[in-house]
Image 1: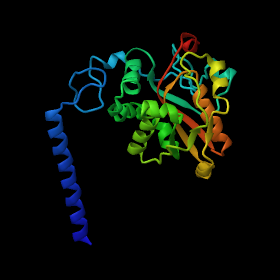
Image 2: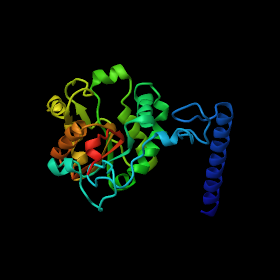
Image 3: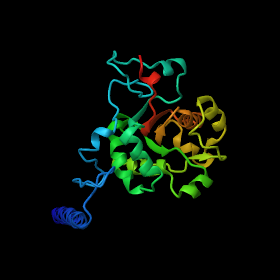
Image 4: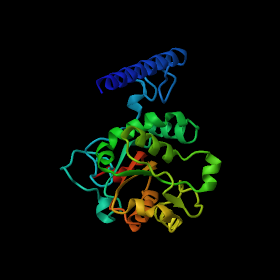
Length: 262
């Protein structure tokens, strides 16, 4: 028994040494660069000191429900006006940074620039922002793309982030549980009401996998929280299918002046 344990320890030590040597060789040939520029950084998936301030990371104080940052210090637990007016279907939502400046550039590099290699580094930022959500959830799942949009883009950015988060947390990831029943128009230029109409009935849970989420706490992952129409449609579908609770973690979120005002 002791000999077997010793062999396992030695084996793990050699694996760590091999990975370290491999990483050192790769970094010597291709030094890791900042996710936003070409500056050299210590490890892949990092931001350099010059680019870091350009990303508006979200921290307290923020709405305990939707996570929108408050512009000024407020009492703990103060819910924003939007959540008071229209209670969202999710229990909590958090985002790593504001969609603007360097944060917007990061999202566009990843989503439009085919920089899928950024997924692990971006997921690390999301992990910091949503640590309690990741700890408490039973499963992770991404917002789905319709098959035609997936074919044009070649990847689902939300699925890449969900898979990366599952890899570092050990939580199971259900990549195809949510489905887009029909194609929808691009939501980028639609207002809140138009987005909700466009998404009505478009998102559903795969009936063959519904049993897996009954009574479970789910974490929904997306790239950008804009008006909340997409994540709300997903959350309603999951709750109808029997999920106990749904929380939301996004890479970025749009913050308008009226949202952060008290």
